[in-house]
Image (cartoon, rainbow, N blue to C red; front, side, top):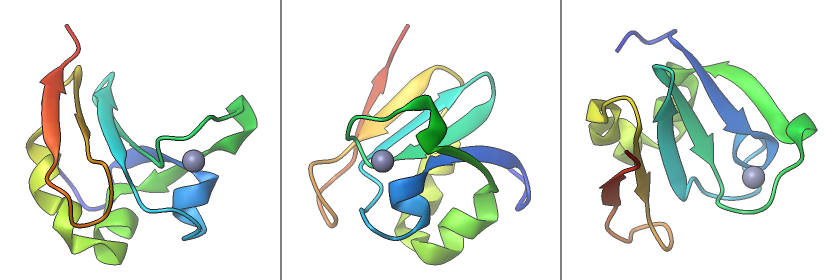
Length: 85
Ligand SMILES: [Zn+2]
């Protein structure tokens, strides 16, 4: 995973209003989401490194393979990985 690989984040995560609670990989791209409801206009394209710098604890999750997702109930809670397929 390259630092500047394209990823998506919801605006809540990007503006630091909410922690990342849901991470999924779709079509090879990571999506960093707060787990709340979103409008299509809430999504932003970012570099993976931007999010990892903000929360280095997310780094191990970059091992997710395409179609997987990981969820946690709050910051500091363990991530639960599940395969969506
Ligand atoms: Zn959000």
